[in-house]
Image (cartoon, rainbow, N blue to C red; front, side):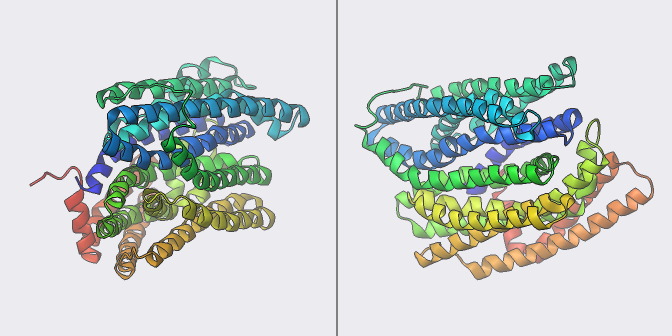
Length: 518
């Protein structure tokens, strides 16, 4: 099965989750707008996400997959089951301790901060959601085990459980609670915590079908060379991901310092960006790590390069029109999705600016997700960390300058732009390192495809913007004008892509999962 066919499975499942994720953000906007309490919630929710990135789908997942695949191939099912149980047992012990310490820290911060401080408002919410970090990390390792067995559908669908629990709290609980204080936002936090249990339970039948059980081994860690190997490999990646996630948290705090509404505006914009990014960029990363791992294990460098080149060409063709389309329709899209209830016209302006700044991150973020797994597949987690550390330093510097020198309504835009530039720089440096090591993709060909794809997408975006402006001038509602402009843009981009990048366009059609096999 080609990479894009596997990506199609992940994308289809992820699409469901992303749509529900967008629904939940629409409801959050309705109930909480861009108020201080919503921004405090955004800051608080990033803490368990930091743990998820470190010990779930991030460093531990990246180190776990190649080793688990190797044990299955060389030593069989029983040894792989024992290894999985030991990793899960170690994870529970380590994260249980960290969660306990985190809860204690929230009390300390709450006591030290001024009662009316916006920072103090985030502490009760953080306290409720911290145990979710442990639950989601267990769920992520189960997903990684399923991915090794080429089971992508259920793990990719698992995040929808979080969104369903979140939506249930918003729709089924919040309307019956007082609007003042922590009542409603607290209900959302408890819904997130319950979702952690549900996400584990949802995957257990699939895990049993591939011959494994959810077991926890709390001994034998030191005796296992494979556990030591994973810990040694994840060490550098943990440092890199920790730096990246701490940088994200610091960015949120800087945004919070710059304006009380800024973290909320960035989060709503991020949700719009993550809909297409989750469908394709994250799906590519999910599929490519096991694919690269098998190719690296067999020392098939030609196949690695070919997979990388084709994945990047696919991404250019898919992501370029989405990026340009978001730039062209940022304000009407935000207004259509969010502007109701507590989310007013000014919130739309702030969020639309962030969407425009993030838009080309679709290309940057997905390209990085395509390149980095090559290093993980070669069990080299140190190089991406080193590169990321330097890029993060530049990103933090740009963010700090944005908060200091930009006007209040634009500081969050500088933060978004610096994130995109950081990701582009990260990808370019990693590609240069791969070429130095003898993995030489055809950069001239890739650059040609990128430029011609951007030209086609730019023409499409100009037409889309003009069409929407015409419809708006004639009084057509957003509920009709935005979908019409999007549909027209898609219809126009297909012939433009076929004209500008015929070979890459044919590759996408040939690999597209819904295409019938000959």
